[in-house]
Image (cartoon, rainbow, N blue to C red; front, side, top):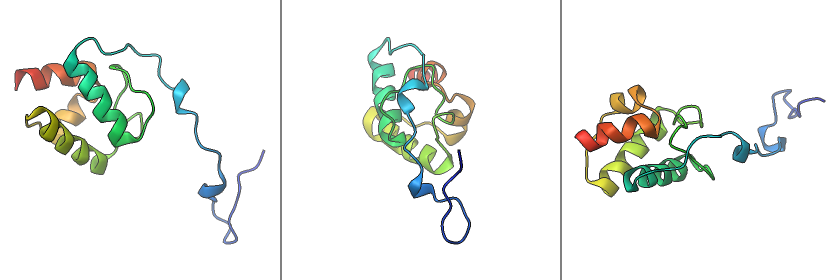
Length: 103
C-alpha cells in the first residue's frame, strides 16, 4: 500500500521485500556447452538464480560495472576476449555466443 520510508523521508530499500526473480524469464534453456557456461557466468555476476539464453544481461539488472566483471569472467573461463561494446550490442546469450564463437 505504501512504500517504507526512512527517518529522512527517503525510500527505505532495506525494508522492501526481496524481488521474486524466478518468474522474470520464460526463455529457452542452453543448447550448447558455450551457452551453458554463459548462463552460469551471467547468473553468478548478476547474483540471479536462473538465466536463460533469451535473457538480456541489462534487463536482469546488469550495468556497465557488472559488464566489466562479466567480460573478465568470460576472459578467465573461456580464454577469449570480447569488448564491452560487444556485450552492449549483443546482451542476450543467444546473440553473444556466436560472437564469442567467431572470435
